[in-house]
Image (cartoon, rainbow, N blue to C red; front, side, top):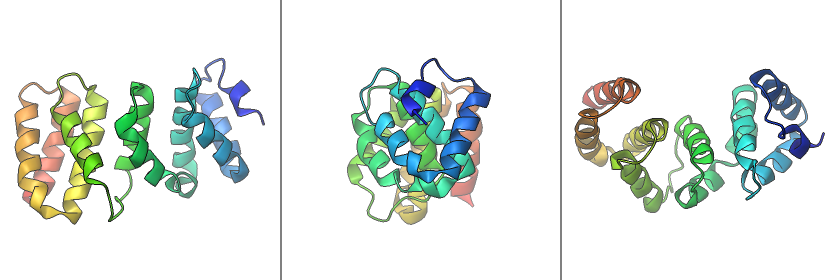
Length: 169
């Protein structure tokens, strides 16, 4: 399977699922997919979308790359890649040795006026997940979330209410 050729032209949802299923069934391709994800190739963001689909089928294959995702997220400028990586990170427990830089990045993203809603929502979820390990940040997180709800979208406010409810329990 030549993954690069499958990513151009852009695969439709069903094609993406088929590629993801093929990778899940033949895990030797996950490394090639990851290499495309982290490359600077024009359509490498498409590979991150496929990586998300692989996670849906075989999460263990993708979990191996979470530490690397955490490391590269603060350096990304491609919003599509950033959204996919933050989504994947938000679905998993954070490693106990998570970097303070990554947590600060998530807070900065959450309060940024230029961050996309989905990126803010995933950053918020990651910070909540982190607060389960470090309850001392829950008050600060709650304050930031409440402040951001004033101008937040429906999707942001929905996730914010769920997280605030969980913090207050």
